[in-house]
Image (cartoon, rainbow, N blue to C red; front, top):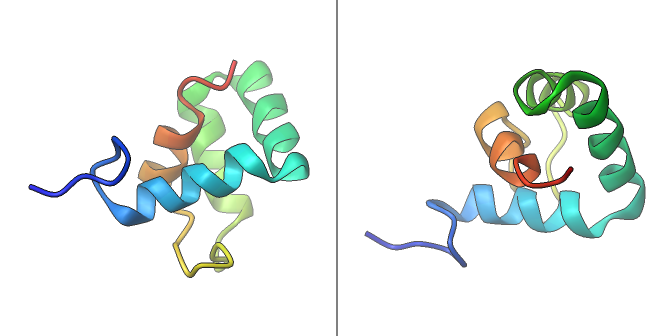
Length: 73
């Protein structure tokens, strides 16, 4: 099984890369985690990003967002 920098898929790694390195997206994710906790924050952020992709083409889905923000706060 191939992993991508510790993530189980390229999509999860790429979403994490963008959430954790784009300041405005990071601040938005951090505020959601602080307000709702990781589980609900992941759903809210994925819904807010519905239809959007990272500049590299990765989809913001709940699983990818959850893995990206699980250690954010």
